Figure 1 (cartoon, one colour):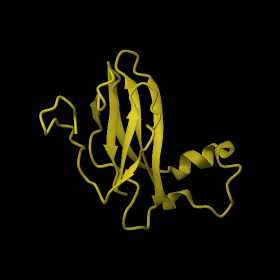
Figure 2 (cartoon, one colour):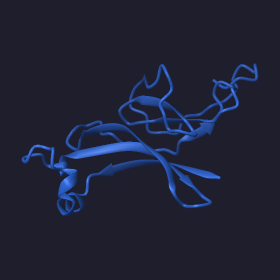
Figure 3 (spheres, rainbow, N blue to C red):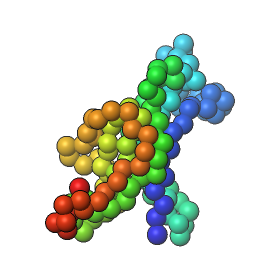
Amino acid sequence: DVLMVAVSYYFDQWYFKSHPDLTADLPKDLDLRNYVAAGVISISLETREILWQKHLDLTTAKTDLKAMIYATPTVCDLDMDGSMDVVVATRLGFVYRLDARTGEVHRNFPIILGDIQAQVAAVDLVKDNRLE
């Protein structure tokens, strides 16, 4: 069993100050507090280990549309190939489709729409046994 979690986070300046090797290649005047990021993490419920994590968006914290995810990822088999997909939308308007096993972004994704602050719905609207 696996838990898929959407994450939005600011960079912890104290953590990076205590691990200078992580910022060694960054410009000295870069202030990590000015950035916010969003992604998805896959966690094994059996071992409680992170199976994979995927960074999706990064913005400054001062912009109107920040790199944030406000809703739970949707896990479904979009193309009915027997493999589960993770579909998630971001505040920047991107809809991502990830491989649930690896976290890799599928071909032709992300799709850009507009500011999205809700969970993506996957439903068979036309009754053809395929998810739209």
